[in-house]
Length: 251
Image 1 (tube, rainbow, N blue to C red):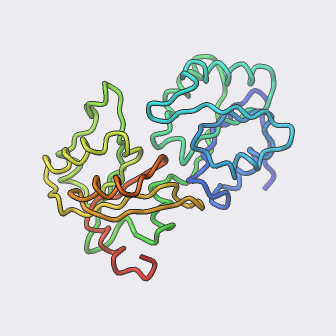
Image 2 (cartoon, rainbow, N blue to C red; image 1 turned 120 degrees about the vertical axis):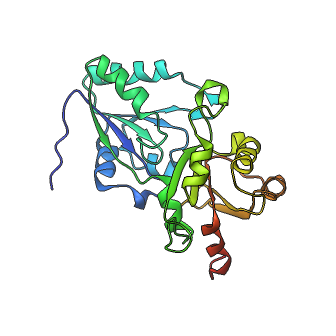
């Protein structure tokens, strides 16, 4: 199928978890064609390197606690380059619609009469399942999965997450961006129904050459992480489903 690019259109593109081979075909084509690529710091260098030689690459760090560019500055860059007639790609790690600030950016762009197309990406919560050969659902251990964020607004008080509903309603919990508030998250899990023996798996840099994983329990994981330090991007799976990893030949 021939893909026709539109003038005065901003493409918000999901880069997936990091492996270029996990990009959608449409994402690949847009990255190859774009004049301007404004990308988050967690996007894999291997994906950035797919851009054409004369593309202008603008890195806007959006890590927890580390921002070299405010949201308003990012919006200004996007609007400015689109209005100048460039083919602009806003490149985000994973899927833009899953904890990717898509809503914040798209509303501002609509308010400035910028036409937007969103290209989905493989969200890390799904990609990690294939990468580490661990299902997120299972007829015996996991009929329901919740994807939640480890960081929130409102001074990081977790006001938007109803932890009692999450823990009672989901067999498996996948937590994005978990490192920053890990002690608090563990305490909330225990307060609302889990015990310290509940299995947890940490995965760093899913699907890339830097991928690492640690398997433990809510009671042991802080000590384990003090011995084997992981950095972002990190994601965690909590629940009995993690026990499958102990019988895997890849463990």
